Length: 338
Image (cartoon, rainbow, N blue to C red; front, side):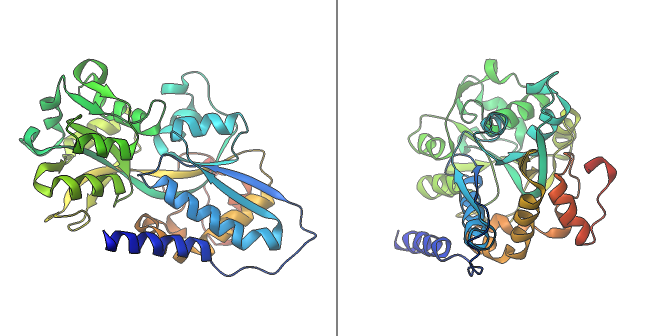
């Protein structure tokens, strides 16, 4: 417990201290922005808070730009907040970005034309986590052993719920009929597993996800399993929406984890409303990649981020301010992203 408190204190002090402040410029116009993240217990919120802190400490005095991170239900609510201009930036799953941009799935026939991307962030690793008693093969086919049992698919309207439904349906399940769905956030899901109220949970997040760590540390590594994805299961999921790729949770990522766990992941995106001025978005993305080491000290997920991977595989048009930055950095921005 002391070790956890020590790490929490370290992160709090790190975020509070932030990187070095830029020189003052009182003449700079004030631009106060809001970044929508997700629930606590995952990765969106802590990294979103770090991005907001970094932006404010580096850009507020020099350019008048400040950023505040808020919690939310995740990707679905975040896009609604952007549309309503209740948020200016958001972290979302690639799945939601593709659906929204193309007017498919949840946005059938209603493409969200206001949406622009800034960068790929880190990958969401699909942690389908169940009690070990239901595991036979060790892969996603074991979800059949949870039929008619309580399974947490994430908060209503969240990216967690949507990606969970898409994956399960692609693998031949009918989530509403096959499982007793519980709509819990990450930390409440972990608590429900510990209390025996659910048989499993869906936690898409960059590893290590604190909710997974919490559940394993409390219940013991032998009582909890993260299900693997076979190559055939990956192909089936991508037949629905081609946003997932092979990923591996490395040995030792979670308490008592003795070997690698092959699963799948999809990129998370930092997106913005199209009306945000070009010079503001340019300053945001330039500042982000100028201080990537700071984010990496806050959360391991930031180690997946890199400027040369910022637009690789991106399927959502970039904001012009981001195009300017990547062009200056020598990246080849394809016409489809302009």
